[in-house]
Amino acid sequence: MIQRKKLFATFVRFGMVGVLATALHYGLYYLLHFIMGANAAFTVGYLLGFVANFYLTSYFTFGTSPSWRKLFGMGGAHAVNYLLQIGLLNFFLWTGVDEVWAPLPVYAITVPVNFILVRFVFTSKNE
Image (cartoon, rainbow, N blue to C red):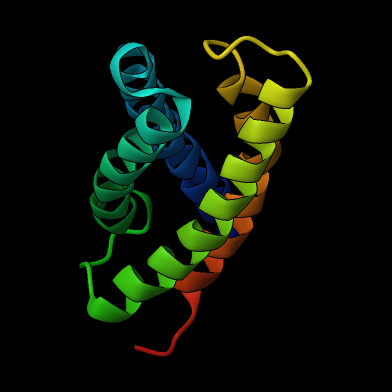
């Protein structure tokens, strides 16, 4: 029972960090897409969101110190996630979804994928 509560608490913290990082990502995307286009704005938002996400995930979500292994593991997870996101972003733009709203269905699809990948990175015992 304690393990379940601990896992649930970790999931809630992961969700909180994810919402914060996603809000930062989308906020930057929204502000920048007017001056640099959708793909460049999405990328800048993604990179800055990643930095915030890494430190918050390390300290707040999993209560661990950042390490090079975790940074590269999370970087790999986010590289996969980024490719999926940019592909989906362009798919939704192609289908006619407005640039302002196109990232929202992208997030709905990719957040669960990212949770699985990042959780593996931060919970594996190989340090």
